[in-house]
Image (cartoon, rainbow, N blue to C red; front, side, top):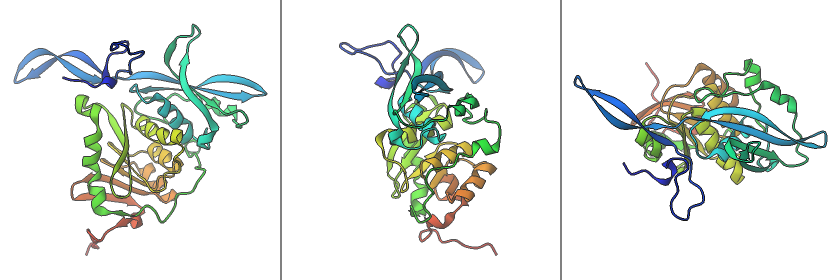
Length: 308
């Protein structure tokens, strides 16, 4: 199979190339069983590795660095993941609060699986927030937090009630557009995806990761680093289910409509209703469910019929 540059083995280089991109897939030997017989062959797996997110900030007129989170993720777009995580967790309130994001180095000065986010001098940061001791896995972004109250990070901006307006046919077409952009998923079948769309259904950006929440952080983190927040006229689609933390991250980015291939959780529906978000699930050609705030959807092509 021909792989693109983003999937080369770490340390491999082409002539004249300084560094290689991180590997997102890896070959393994498997026994493939079909019709009662087994044969040894190569298979592709999505890579999962830890990433340490460090925060550099000023405390009592001194510059300090502390570990903020360790997350299991698919390598690639780590700067976006770190920026998105800080923003969607409410640690960074404005994109301009970030002075820079760079690979971190160990005590010997060598690069390791870490990213350092530096806050601008003068940006206030309450380092008691670090007492939460974030540890996130690839399957759950908020499992370590103590209660629902600590989960409910209040966004700096309210969700706008009148936008975006989206035709129901656009929503039906988001799934195929998302799948067409899932490059690594097609190779491995093992990654989640989050895509950012405009109101006409055009895919603007897409990120993949072994974790649902990581894919969302990468997607939003790109917009943070580019200074394009809030995302008031955008839709976000995720490849799996929608949980509370996915909706929370969307709220923080100002996204008013979240669409999913699968089901939402009860807390996700509650949050969407509380914050005025449109939440759509089980999107398939010709059908989908709307769980909250259907008023943003134009039903001219699919008029609502009340049950008799």
